[in-house]
Image 1: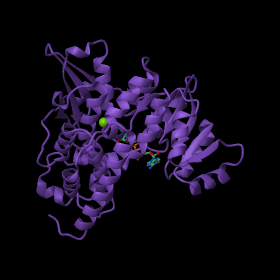
Image 2 (image 1 turned 90 degrees about the horizontal axis):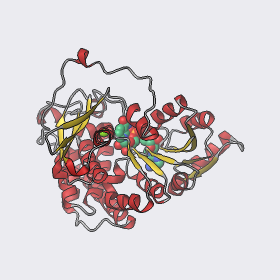
Image 3 (image 1 turned 135 degrees about the vertical axis):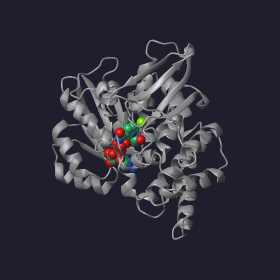
Length: 390
Ligand code: NAD
Ligand code: MG
């Protein structure tokens, strides 16, 4: 029986994880859950999975939850300390890291330092603090399993091969809802347009990241740390069908890919049950019916976020943490209709430009860079608000 702590249990990945657990109750036991604002759903999950401990963002929500679940319920913790306790002090064998954004970093790092295996969905953790996190993985001897579909595909395509034989990793990207749009069309994009992803159902932030292609930029950085390859050997191909989830090219020219329908259940389940595979009740991939698969190069003019991410990891140090923080604020401002869609890369580029990168080998260094970038992004967003665009 594998004991799980699910961080971000009320989100898209968290809910899919718990569905897998419910279908394989003989293999998994939930010992900890954490949620943001959706207390009603957390309450339902508590009644269904009986965790020993849960965490919510603040004392007020903790009090409210304690009142509702009564004295027989789990321990209710709150704040970053609560998240860390669920990740590192609960009796979990594996921590599913599925909080969105920089808030996922500290509990994920704490889980790793405590020697827990981690199923990593929160890509921001490696973007912000890849060097630090991979050093902690090596020191603790825990295992880090990718949940992101591209990284799961690469992980699966590397199995049985020598890493020294790898020439390139090729990440696929759907291209999002605005593939083939012109710059003029992109000026008018609304949050509703951007939230309508053609292939994947995901949380709001990652859906906007997919529309700007920052998601793929964050994934290039994530792949760099997970698979220990320079970004110059990590390519991105647009693949609108989202069937080939990513590929590994070897020195002899062979390319190994992993294919499947676009459904996060498969990569989540593989991270939970590795090296075994769980029988899942998903529709099969019918390649004959599909007929064709397409691939193209990304459009760097309409989607500059991908290039910004490559530049940030090349600069290294605290720059990727700054890129991530600026992106989080820019996406939030776009979702609240404070800035336009094309302002997102502008804001990020302006913040990164102002940043004097330093080493990112301690948590304090990356958290300080994250705070600095948020303040800078806030100022730029305020300046942009009300300014006519472009
Ligand atoms: P989501 O917005 O649906 O869920 C996020 C979860 O984190 C929720 O439970 C929310 O309550 C919690 N949360 C948010 N802010 C918090 C905070 N400040 N403190 C504590 N908890 C907080 O997001 P998602 O789509 O499930 O994505 C989660 C992570 O997985 C992201 O990093 C995303 O990039 C990654 N990911 C998601 C998908 C996908 O298909 N959804 C695919 C690959 C990777
Ligand atoms: Mg992905």
